[in-house]
Structure formats: C-alpha cells, structure tokens
Image (cartoon, one colour):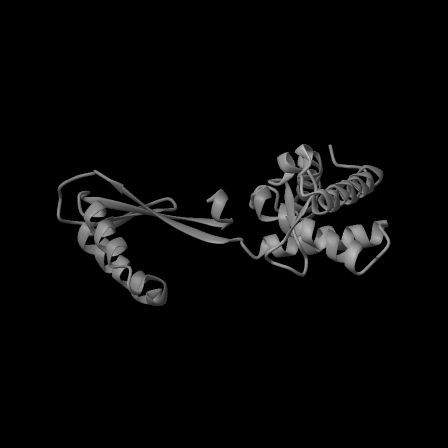
Length: 209
C-alpha cells in the first residue's frame, strides 16, 4: 500500500522533531560534559550533514525507520524499487530533506516533498547499469567449440575466457593498475575450471546484482 501524502508529511515532521530533540541533548552534553544515555545509544542513527561531510545529524532509530519508508516511496514512485537497494537512497534522501527544509527553509508541502523524493530517486537511478558475472563451471573436456551460447548465457573455454578477461582488464586498467594480487588470485581461481559462463544482468545496482 502506498504511503498517503499526510503520512509522508507526518514522517518528515517526525524526523525533524527528533533532530531538534537530540540537538538539545547534544547541547546538554556540551554544557555538563556528560552524554545522556539516550543520545549515546542513538549515535549510530544519524543522517549525513548537508554541508559537512565529517558530521552527522543524530535523529534516532525510529526516525531512520521512517526515513527508510520515505526512501521506499521514492523508489516506488520512480518505478525502480526492484532495481535499487534502499540503502542507496535512504541516507541521500535524508541529506536532501535537511538541505531543503532546514538550510533552505522551504515549506514542508506536497510540492517540495515530491521534489525531494524525486531528487533522491534520480541520484539512486545513477547507480543502475548492467552487471556482468563470470561463473566458473565444469561442462566437458572437448577442445571445440571454443564457446557457445544458451539463451542469455555465454559459455567460454579457458582460452576464450582468458582473452575476454585480458580485454576487460585492459579496458579498465586504471582500476586494476598495481593490483597484482587480485589479478594473480583471479587467474588462479578461474584457471581451475574448464569453462566459464558469462551472464549480464541489465538495470540493477551493486547490491541487487
């Protein structure tokens, strides 16, 4: 069931009210040099600061749970809920909310909420692309064919796979430069199999691959 506009607005107001509450605890901590127990437990439940990458805005566990619901709504509205993991949009959305409604002081209304959710979904959509997997397997001991295809899966013998892998490493040489251990261990692992299956998964993020 999709979240109602009233519930979305309520969740955003709750997140901000929790931030105000924990900010007061932080002031108390600064004044008394004693950290309130509730604040201590809430340290892990924070949102990245919109202007300070080294700082987090503590909001507490319940606020993060509501932020996750808002993130799910953003993905669902954009039609990418099956392609992007919630973790890719949850914290960016939190930062967007604080930027728009705290720093820029925009009213928390339907128009600005929709824009915030849309902005977060667009950021998450940038992580979507085709992911290629190489799966080692044992099929047969014949020298030919060098490769064959069944549906979306391409099967390659060792000779063909090494050529394919060399091309990929060269294409992404800036990433693999200096990582001799990774290349050596990959060659050792895949070299113990006679065949390698290649399959590409379109339109997914790193965690949904």
